[in-house]
Length: 626
Image (cartoon, rainbow, N blue to C red):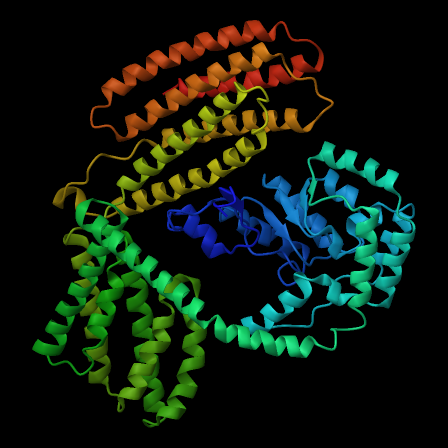
């Protein structure tokens, strides 16, 4: 790709794991490779859009994971428009294949940004006919992708379905499909085709290319060749693909070695980070070693010193007690001890009732303990009731003394795990709040700086859609701050760490979270308004002088955000605070100049400019309120 001058590309099919890896910075590529510019989640098909609720949930999961757009494949008309509406509400475009018989112009008008493979179905070709409405109505009756019930079908079978159906829908054509294509070809009108391009341009929709008369006849021939089923040589070609798979074995081994190399590089990076600096990697290392130490200590006490008959319960419980916070350890300890005690007592009673017959005791115990384990008060510890009961039953004869031993060993393990977690480098979560809030400030600065630079260009609104998408993603970063704040509050509950170890700087006040939430809301409003100006040709744009002055104010607001980032991370915060106050004064002066330019706007340009002025004024006010 690089040899041919291609420096970036759009990935047309992804998955949630890839999106999460990219969001965390763990998705790496060779140094000399084109840049990944955009990536969706899994293709939207009838398998993951069976109901309106599932359609909306699928789109939300993909956008939350960081999808740059939503890719449609084999969907019904109804589910397509539901997915399109949800994607637009979330601020991302939808691209891909159009369902059979769909109103193409409606899809374009509602925000379809890219139509793939116009020749794989009637789609755009039907719109180029003088009988387009009749053809689309006929195509939509009883049509659509008819996939069998797949349930838990393995990936290989699903891959074969996708290869045959999604990648080449021509294979699904029936005689009535051929008749509709013939009808569309016979009524093809070049003038109508040229007229069709106008709404595509106005809506910002990009079909791969518009069909010509020659394309229409080629399409007709391709559909006829696909009838009535796979061609006679299809089985031979399938066998040939099997030979090809053998030849590709070396490539797969190469991919496997590359994956192992990447994983090993990530492991080394994590180890280096844990050794060199404080962070999540070091926290994970400390907690893991503490859990191992607690288990060894519990076994040494119960198994080696006391020679307890069920010493396994002590280290098993101790490991579960070393939680992410001291409060979590206490809560988990109470839940686990309660459910283990219930499991022990119930299983012992069942053994006594069944006269030490294991099978009968399991029938009396496991159904009840599995149901009890789902009680919400036990949280994630409910499963330990059934597993403890299994230990008791499989251990053999049960008596009052053995029941007492098991409860005592469980209690010893819980106490050891709790004491280790609370008094040996007790976990605190103060650093994440400050780091993540600083990340929000830096992301906001980058967005405002991008808008400021873009508005200085000749076509200042060319990047408006991208700004809007980046602004919507600020909500994800704000949620990360909220999660970190919750961990910090829970980490400080009943935690002796403030007296036993250095905790570092305290987290910023909660008011800062609220203020940055308002700042992000204002930045989103500005980006949304700029995108609306670009997408609505009926609106008059403010004058170039207005946009230049707006660019200056946004640039100054970006500098304020950079200074805020330094305030959150600097060891000497006074210097950046003085600098920030000076820049805030310049931003207020820039707002006064922007107001003067606004007064010279007229008509709809004044309405649009007024909305931008109001939002930017609120933005600067929020930044200046620190």
